Image (tube, rainbow, N blue to C red):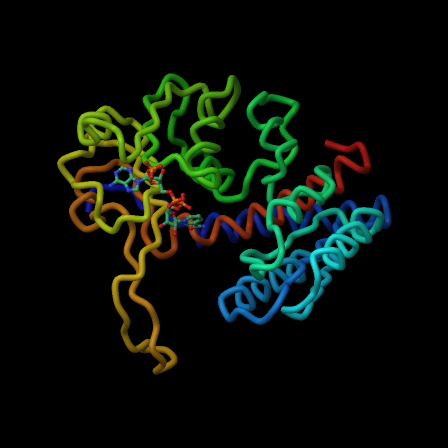
Length: 302
Ligand code: NAP
């Protein structure tokens, strides 16, 4: 293997330790800790496990964590009233509504009801606008793109002047990371190209990339011959391609693959993220970072 592996699991530990230390300092000086509420409607098993992990991580870094579980049949009006309650609660700095919501509830209406200054997921239109403007205007960059940028920067990869190619244009990954990398400032200043299903020659664009960020959700889409030797390859894709029995637990677990042919790509790239253990662990980590930022904005500290 020639590529340096960018391990999200290791970077997560560094960042969580930094957050824990900062939370302790703020608590000592200001007598307050970041407060994160996760609202879970119903009992979808995947949602339950995501929320449990978020709460566990919030607890680990010293946050006040509130898990607010609501029944599947909660009305839209009741859910909006609940959000309003947390919007007004000064001990809460981050509000997270776990998606998907039941069909009788308008997801957009619910997400737009969150106070933009407590929208630590960064999906409220106000925060999307702030991200577009860039610089000091940005409050909460969305968590997965923020994690990707952090991984690139912490690996020492030069972004200024770099050709960045983003495969995928979703609102949660492709568009925001493209926008973040083209901003004027550290960890960005890149020349960005975004490609998608209507792009005429995907291979041509990928081959030009100094930094290739792939978020398509298609296993093995990016072929090794599309990778520029020495490039930094960030594989966001998480695709279930089968099942196996876990050696640790003896239970059935999903076999996960990324959007890049990892085995071949790692012999050509300069840096590469594995799947699993790459971008995945960064999302919840950045949610913690955004919640801490929210409290710091409130206290008027950097
Ligand atoms: P999405 O909403 O389905 O968007 C996929 C994008 O990729 C679309 O813009 C699509 O183009 C493009 N695309 C799909 N097939 C393509 C192809 N053959 N050639 C070129 N472009 C293609 O997906 P997403 O939510 O961004 O997620 C992408 C992947 O990242 C998924 O595997 C998801 O599980 C993973 N993910 C991981 C994390 C994490 O690790 N924390 C977080 C979020 C997502 P069109 O717009 O033209 O359809």
